[in-house]
Length: 395
Ligand SMILES: C[S@@+](CC[C@H](N)C(=O)[O-])C[C@H]1O[C@@H](n2cnc3c(N)ncnc32)[C@H](O)[C@@H]1O
Image (cartoon, rainbow, N blue to C red; front, side):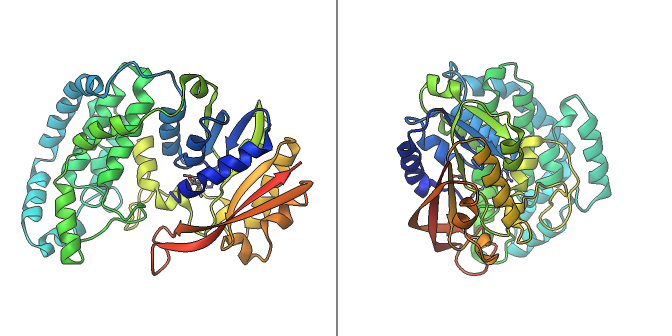
């Protein structure tokens, strides 16, 4: 997600130098690399517009020390998982057979199978089933991944496993483990998702190597990945640190204008810097996490009610930076901004410092060479080298 792991230590050091009392708000926290780097430095408030990131943040940055092991969670969930798995295997018996044949066949067989696949975006019958599942309060509710993302982002078998795992998680009574289990469920799916790092579109077997890779990936088990992810989604920092942290989901500009944040020492902002709306690139994880049976369209099988931000719009990026700087300066705390020289704001012919100086006394700029993910949107290499700047804005 344009993760700034390589910048996280610089950000931590810049924040530590400010010596500000109070928590650090990470307004665009994504995968939380900055929050993680602050575990020895300050308590954190994370925020992101995508709710699936919040499940990961809650699992890692909040909560008491876990009293359960991964093996105990697996043992607890297994009966519910197997029960729903059997039901879905029977519902999709014919389709599962076709999928197995396509996977054992040629590249063209698999291409044909994927191209003809029915899902909510192209089939009225699937839309009707989605409506029934959305309204069901029993185990029938657990069919979203199969109806929306199978034979594309995942194999049908994997989608069924994903739905069955979710059924087991949602019916588990240990609510204290819920964020951990959901974060592992998302993380496990992300390992096997048939897409290039982001999920704007899935990959098709257009070459022999792509065919081999899809056949190999689709033979792997979601349940196994979920089990391993329970171990990898570990809690960060001490219990005392986690207990002072908070996790928000929403528009960063709403959060800083609402005036509800308490005990804040510094605000950190790492806003989007390209015209690509994150919600288009990560919609599969968002829909899986929300499990809310939205509409779906296009080759990407995307929901239409995606979050959009002015930071990714040429016509709104300047006013978004003004809103950010104005609202944080009113909180009377320093604002640290990460933004590359090549960011969208530059296209509007203005710099972050020029805007920040209208609201803050002083702006110090530090620059670093970095590799940026282009999210595969542009042609050419998926990473390009860029100058990443840190703007430390002082009240
Ligand atoms: C450049 S990435 C931040 C990456 C993060 N620092 C990390 O290390 O993972 C921008 C993030 O902002 C989120 N986002 C975009 N617009 C937003 C907005 N207006 N309010 C809150 N979050 C937003 C995106 O979902 C994405 O996770």
